[in-house]
Amino acid sequence: MSSQVPLKERALSPERIARIGREMQTACPAFDAAAFTAQVTADLPRLELKARIARTAQGLHQHLPLTGQAALDTVLRSLPATPEAAGAEVDFGLYTYAPHSAYVAAHHLHPGRLDQALAAFASITPYFSAEDAVRTALTSFPEQTLAAAAGWATAADHRVRRLASEATRPHLPWSVGTDLPVDAALPLLDVLYADTSRFVTTSVANHLRDITRTQPDLVLDTLTRWRTEERAKPAELAFITREALQLRLKAGWAPAYTALGYDPQAAVSVSPIRLDRTDYQLGDSLSFEADLTAPTDTPVHVMYILTRTDPDTRTREKVAHLTRATIKAGAPLRLTKAHALPSTGRAALTPGSYHLALQVNGRRHNVALLRITSDRSN
Image (cartoon, rainbow, N blue to C red; front, top):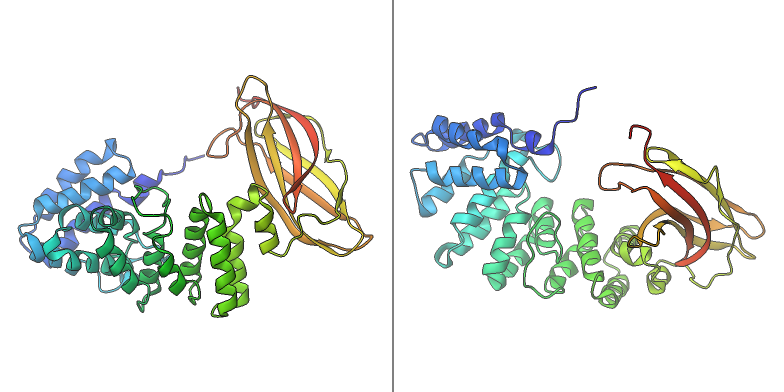
């Protein structure tokens, strides 16, 4: 079986570096595409993805025989006629064009031509989201960048509208932080939450979820205000609410459940959890089931929690969604799940003692004990 090609190799390969060089040379015949490609690709094997982006951006700067606005215009002119012509098959864009916004952030964020640099981020974003590069501008020029983002929030292109929310997130993954207050971009979200694009509203939800880490009540107040404004479709606002409160739901925060229409104090009875066995190896599937009953029809939001319990280790919990359903009065709701026990990747587990619990409308019920040992290959 062939191993999967790492993202860094697919995202910025020598072939893609050569493509950037050709496109630059088309826009500026004096650009030495061969020298650019040779120099950048020689460094690629030792670099991870973000470093590859930065190295390619540095190569653009080194080999462009122009400076200032003329250089920036050339980089923008090198972009294909449309994102579709470039081969961008998803809204996020094509990694080939990640170095272009990184180049702008590294070499064109100067007070004298800041407006042109910020406009360049919007132009590049349909080819590859400039969200990471915008963070540099937010750190150095927060007021001007937020003002530009207000313009992006009303752009015709949904990818640019998303940039206004995504680039200003308090905790943008894979990116540097900013010194902005956690609610600095809330006025932008007030514009974007009723957007017609799921690409945009997903970013709004993610942005709110970042805010819930420190100010969950502010997020609830914002969602309540949006609901009263009646600008967004109810189903879309329900999606935003559910995604925005995800961390607080996992934590069992009662107001989050109430906001979604689940009663944390509902009279729900939970049977003991039934495991298919109590001893597992990494790589196995943990299969379990349980029954929920209630005296009246009761909406429930159910999660399950797998907790490492060995006394000599730090307690670690893995909280996962199980179901959203309604218990019918007098009729048990059967819950079943097969949960993989991976030994590698972000969700990897370590051998040890664990307990499994169910969380219903934010309240934890019952515990089943189990043991996980090393996988058979060890």
